[in-house]
Length: 160
Ligand code: THU
Image (cartoon, rainbow, N blue to C red):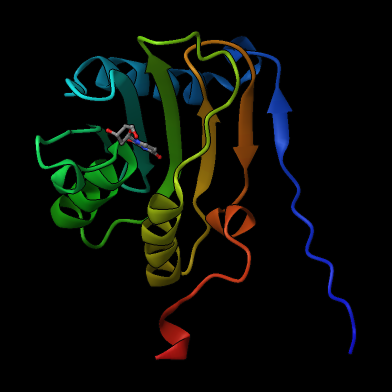
């Protein structure tokens, strides 16, 4: 038996003003998209903005449903739309922001496990890392250089 240690490195910015200009703009678009979230049940709004290598930006927000599992997270709304509209473009950066009517979201809120798995699919497909920036509504912003950093021991097409 041997023990294996898995480490992840993330970067933490104190607030959006510390981000590079083009990422601030991307986060602003994610914030706009967040306002369009349809969340009558959770009152928890998430916005996503994806920068593609063709310079297009695709946004998305979570869309809920009275049959709860039929709703979809913001990240998957955005990446599936990007994949559907620009199938040959690489996704370079994903910016995420989340707000809640129930509490102040001032700590970084990471993508859920299902979204990590979905994002990972596109990282494998395009053979290029996707940078991910995530935050609450205010406060610190966390950057991951790749989705793989957020999903160690991921399941991918190589196993099939
Ligand atoms: N949600 C997202 O949009 N992204 C995540 O990564 C986590 C959760 C949404 C789904 C649901 O509409 C609400 O947040 C509460 O779970």
